[in-house]
Image 1 (cartoon, helix red, strand yellow):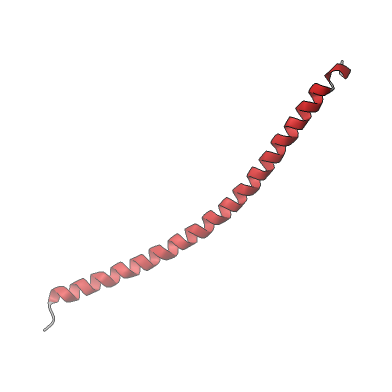
Image 2 (cartoon, rainbow, N blue to C red):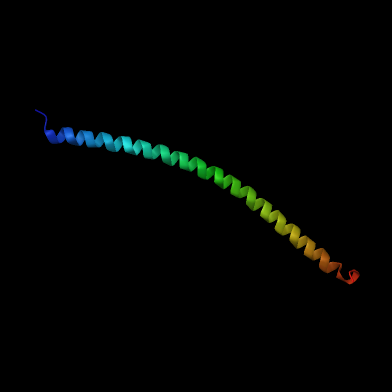
Length: 70
């Protein structure tokens, strides 16, 4: 004879398992999205570093050529 509590617990357990599977799928989608964002952020960081270096070079050359600029 099966206990009514066992049946109820089995139903709850199956609902929990289904919800965990959905949660795992959602987390995998979020992780893929975060990876894409990180790749784009690396590109932005590279451009920012290039601009910073360009700005430093411009300032260096302007300071070096300041006697020639009136």
